[in-house]
Image (cartoon, rainbow, N blue to C red; front, side, top):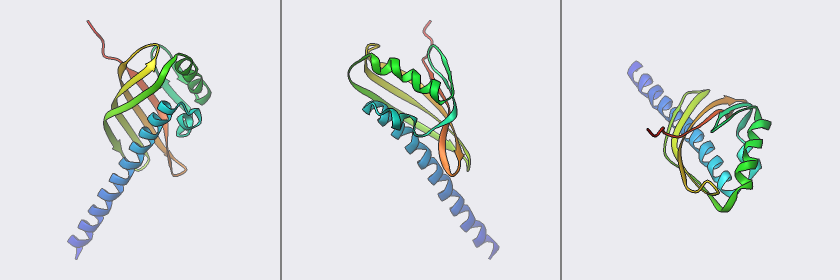
Length: 141
């Protein structure tokens, strides 16, 4: 009887973990879609008030500063924006998660750009929110 309880508990834990990973991945893909659509409200929708972003070249502290980083991005638009994640990897617990993926961006004066994205998320009031966002490029020797 005890083994059946352990197996049932293990299955439930796996289902719960998969649900958390799925929810976190949806936050990231919805955010990327919002960037492609130029929807500032949806871009900000899942970011914490105390978000910290490491971007090239600056750091943004707080939601207001993060929002302002998008001014330059959208002011230098050449056409439709593409902001497409690939190879999304999610690690999620009950209240903390992180995501890494490759991003492809196009449609701005920078031209096509492939970069790496890492996000840290916390579950606050039952919702996943992005508390840390880091964009990076590989160094070239």
